Figure 1 (cartoon, rainbow, N blue to C red):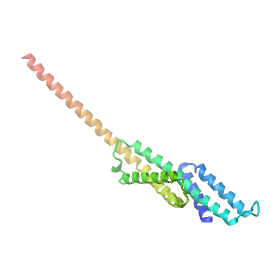
Figure 2 (figure 1 turned 135 degrees about the vertical axis):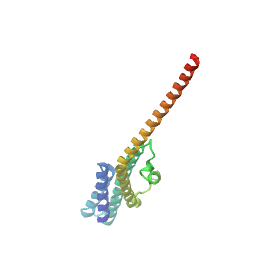
Figure 3 (figure 1 turned 180 degrees about the vertical axis):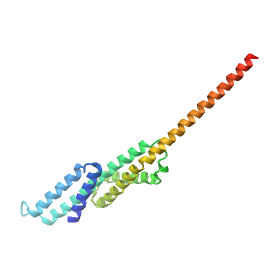
Figure 4 (figure 1 turned 135 degrees about the horizontal axis):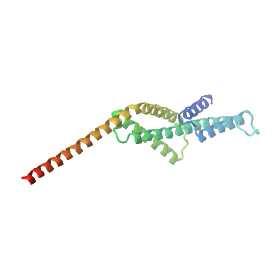
Length: 190
């Protein structure tokens, strides 16, 4: 019980630090933990089975871990999508070599979340996996944030190259037009 509660509490705090909120579902699950523990310690009647109440509390701890992790994962996805949008004009993998693996991981995790929701399965068995996935995605988001300076330099460099190409093209066309006009003028004067 202590291990599961500590994991749920630690996960909710990590998500809260990352997202600035832990998510209402995770907090509600922790409230249910307290409810079942109170029923174990101070039952309202003789019919209350302390072991069952304790198991319910443990299950709610697992569920809180899952809910907090899922909220953090979804927020991490938003940050990754934002990064992708911010740098859509350049090749991200030139600065973030494992960019394709990051996108593949996001797709895999998205599918797992969707499959679990569609199946309406009890999500508690995956609670530790999802907590680890959340940690992994936080590390990825931190790496992407650290790569922003290099990405901005890449965007600027490619913008300069595009401007140079455009300027060169315009000057070339103007040179050709000037040459044609000069030739036409010379032919006209003869």
